[in-house]
Image 1: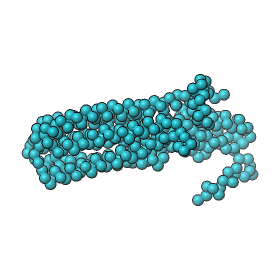
Image 2: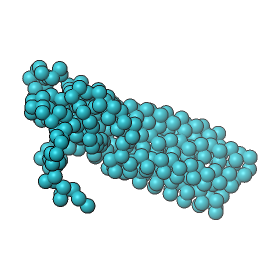
Image 3: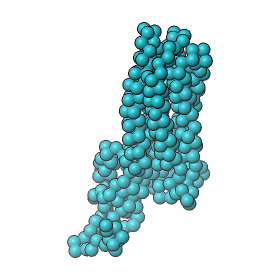
Image 4: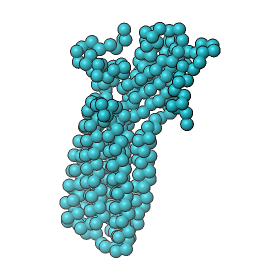
Length: 334
């Protein structure tokens, strides 16, 4: 008997709905909790950035600062990126269907793509605003208030960035990490407003647009990192260290003579695995299945955020025996 066999009616139903997955109850609860943590991070971020944008908008009305207006727009847009990511987290909780057999976790990848596009739009807007101010420099009124509003914008965005990135990495959500990087870009924009206000106070009206162009370059660098992370996730890339750790765990399972092809993929912020292991050629079906179950059990403990694994047991070939997969060769040849 598997050591983590479901005992309650609820556990049996959950086990029945995921055949051949052998998922443990704590893994399922961990997956649900990770989605809940992501939603909490989004709500907190929305509240902080909403308050930041409100404070800045009041100063914009009083000062007429175009740079601060752009920063306020950035903060508002950053808060609104919580919408597609929140939808993705909600969709990710839905059960798999006969059409979406892996569930809806990949909606996070689409949300991450939306966030990357938003970062790109923010960079373009920042560049356009800086060039326009460079061509038509104008004095800024109420400079102390503008400076305070810029500091508020930076503090709000940096706090939100750290919170999103920390939670995103903890639950394995590339989209939430990208959203945190987006918040950090808006914090850079706030610093640009502050430095521009300092230059204006010294009578150098070109300070604001020049700093704005420098910050645009910084946003492009953040965009590159965020895009790389999201696109890698969409292409099913995983950290090679995870593959190495999974292979080591499988080789330590009694009855596993060799580890064949191993594949890991992200479904949202959860991992799934597929692997072929070689067992004794004289083992019975029940014995081979028991080895496969123990192999999956080892993977669930060894690989962080892994919630399911499909383990295929291949018999060790006997001398002179044909490859049992020979009948599939014409399907897999290039």
